[in-house]
Amino acid sequence: MIRALYSSASGLQAQQNNLDVIANNLANVNTTGFKKSKIEFQDLLYQATRMAGSEQGAGNALPAGVEVGHGTRTVATARVFTNGEMSQTGEKLDLAIMGDGFFEVSLPDGTRGYTRDGGFKTSSAGTVVTSDGYNVTGFPAVPSGTTGVTIANNGQVTIATAGGTQTSRLQLTRFPNPSGLTAIGRNVYRESVASGAPETGQPGENGFGEVNQGSLELSNVKVVEEMVNMIIAQRAYEVNTKAISAADEMMQQSNNLKR
Image (cartoon, rainbow, N blue to C red; front, side, top):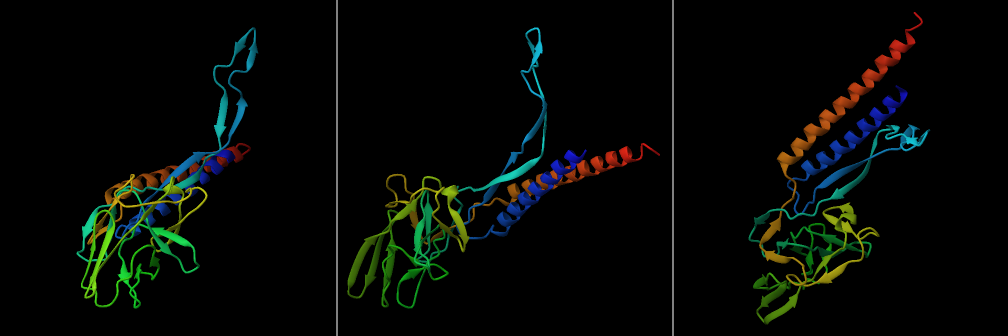
């Protein structure tokens, strides 16, 4: 009965974590480029009072043992990097990645960050930056007096000014295990040991996604799916509380045996 209390308590904690992940997904349903998380659980150690396969004499062995688990725990909150839907904005510096890849940005501490949020803008100096002012790596400056900015699906950027045009080509970055990236907020991820080393390439080539000018990638959170997950988490939490109540009542009955 004591074991049942602790096992059910671990279930309550796990479902609380589950609800926290679901709530964060729903909170970011309108966040550009947001990738939802899915929680993963793992059972804990088992206490074995009889081992399967134990010799019982005369060549006989137990076909099954007696094992009682000690609950569950949260083992991972993995990011799901499926593509979100595209939203047409018409803004010349809005870019959506259709497929695999990230935009690379320079963080204030000098390190590199990676984002799927392509809602870019120009700074007072003409450099292309994110909404938080992080410089977008490899994007040419847009000088004052620019008459047009055209970005092809293969990442070729053409900037037209009164003095002529200049062209360059964007690069994207991808990782062997994007779920291993460290989310630091503000739609930005950092490389980690688990993500593997970054690989750069040009849009539309060697498996990299294409870029679409005048569009933004929406969050890949599906509200109906998250609401169903919330109901499941709530019911799982409820049955764990009932298991605690049942174990408590059994302990109470045991304590009252002498009366």
